[in-house]
Image (tube, rainbow, N blue to C red; front, side):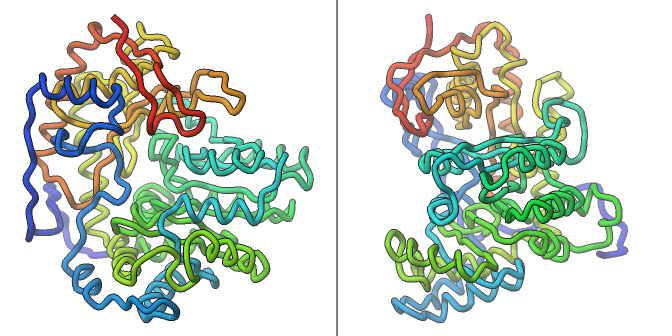
Length: 460
């Protein structure tokens, strides 16, 4: 860490070399686009979106170094040089021995759960995300969320992404031989992008050891989690993000990764582990569904982009800017009383639609309604994380999600300060009209991951 006195102004740690035009639309056009899309923002065409905060997955900007290495991509089917550079980067950062490339994180999840999870099993996590949960339920197993008790509050507890250690030990004790693995998601996406402390991962490791259960990381945002540990955890202020990341990975038996997040790439991911037996089953499944083990559904240039991006995600100037940008937006909204999860997450701001729209019951989907209102007001696309995403049960019934949230996820290195100011202005306009918003009705609901393709309509 530098001893130089920092400036108060945190700037974007890059300069813009290539630009892409944004297209403004009228409110009338946005209403038309929503009707065409069945009032589902996932189905709205990108050309009708001004600021796209639907996801930070694969939507960031590539660096000049990434583009340069992509030009050197080796497209050899088996044993390409690009794979070995990719493998070396993953091994260097994670310390995990066996590296399996996949086209994105959900493929790594599916392969891992096919190899390790059977019908009737329980898979524990601080909070499973949508595809993780669906891949577990596809195995006729149960995805069990055990977030720490602080996660349910809106105070400023520094590590609200932690797993509940008491419940972890209790469930493992009460269910011997029924839990094939435990996962910890860093940062905790469904829980508001909240970080997990090193102390929590270390304690979870000890509990898993006592019960002889392997521990895995869902490491999509490992670099952001490492930066939060640097900022907030006692004894970590003088350690670099890569040092902290290496310790995080040293405490687990394996990891799944969507490199579309903290791999800083448009596509890609990996499954990494130390178990020489399980990896054989995983590689067999990879060959069946993804590709040969040295490309795993990716082009050589994709592997090159990830190999560079994993290191760029750990650069201090970049992490400082990224976390500060989200915090800046949160500060503006907090001054006006906009309810949200605090402290703000590393990759996204999570608006609390359940508190913001108390007149809309959960089964009229307040988070969905709020996301629609934000798009209508200013062309900003966000994502509901509430009872549309998580209310659907395996038997077809519905129940309220733990929280009714709207996630505004910021692509990496894509938007500038003025874009963030515009987002704040739009959100405050919607907040001023909150009493006028109405709920939504489900028109068509697919059986799995319905938020991606469901059709709804506004209630009159």
